[in-house]
Length: 374
Image 1 (spheres, one colour):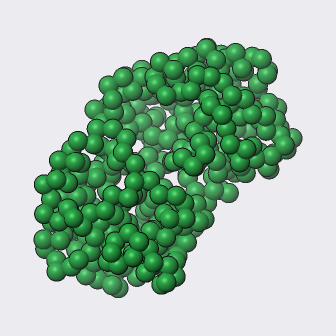
Image 2: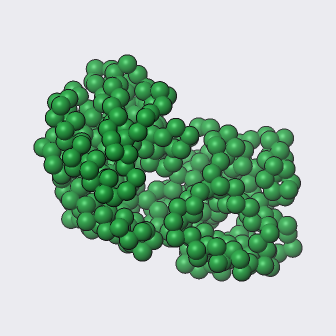
C-alpha cells in the first residue's frame, strides 16, 4: 500500500506537541512495516533525520503553510494533486487537516477541539478557519484518532461523529525525561534559578495555558510562605500574551520568575529533573504530555482538574481548579510544605506513567491505519 503522510510539522529543532507525536509514531511505523511505501509530504526543505527508513519517499510541496490562506492552497489544491500522481491508498494527517477535494481514504488525528470552546484564545482568522473546516474534516475522514477519551467524547458530541469511528490513542513519553542525579539538579539550579528551588511550567505562552493564573498563584504563594522558591516558565510566545505581560508587571515577586523561552531537549531534561514540581494548570488540554513526562522524571505534579487531565494524571497528581488561582496557591503551599506528599506523588507517578509509551501509541495508531485500508 502507498500511504501519504502530512509531515509538515516535522521541523528540525522545532518539534512541539503534534510534531513529537508525528516523529515518535512514524519512526516506529515505517520501520515496523517495510511492506508498505510511505510518502512524507513536507511544506519546506526537510532534515534527513526525518527519513526514517528506506520505504519513505520525501516530497516537498509548496507553499509553506504559514497562514490560513496557504493552508487552503496546500490541502485543497496541492495535496489532491500529489495523492493522484502517486496513486496513494491513504492520506494520513497527524495534525487533523484533511483535503475535501479528494476521494482517497483519509485518517485524521484530531488531538482536541479547544478552538470550539475557546475561540477567543486564537487570532480571529485562525479560529474561523478551524471552526469552519474541522467539522468538515471530521465528517470527511474514514476514521479519526484522538489522544484521550475526553477528546473522543467531545468530538462525538460536538461534530455528531459516530463513536465507533473514533479511536483513542494516548500520547507516549519521551524517554529522555528520566530522573537526574543530585549533581545534575544542582547544576540546573545554578544555571537557571540562582541555585534556588523552583516550580516549573512547560508549554507555549498561549491564553488557554493559563500562565497568568499561575503567575497570580505563585505571587500569592510567595506572600504566604517564607521561601525563596522561584518559578520557571519554559516555552515560547505564541499570540495574545498581553494579559500575561500585565499580570507579570503587577507582581510583587516578579524578579523571581524566570522566562527561559524554548529549551533544547537536554536542557529541558535537566530543568525538569531539578524542579520542585511541575505546575501545569491550563484551562483546556486534549492530553497534557508534560504531566506524564514529569512523572517519568520523578517529579511531582500539580495540574488542572478539567478536560483530559484527570484521565491522564489519575491519582498521581494534585489537582486544582484552573479558574481559581487561590486554589492553585493552596495546592502549591501544601506540596511545598509536605515532603512525604511529594515522595508519595513521585511513587504514584512512576506507576501511572506505565500506561503511556510511544511503542503502545504507534501500535494503536497502526491498527487505525489498517482499519482504513480494509
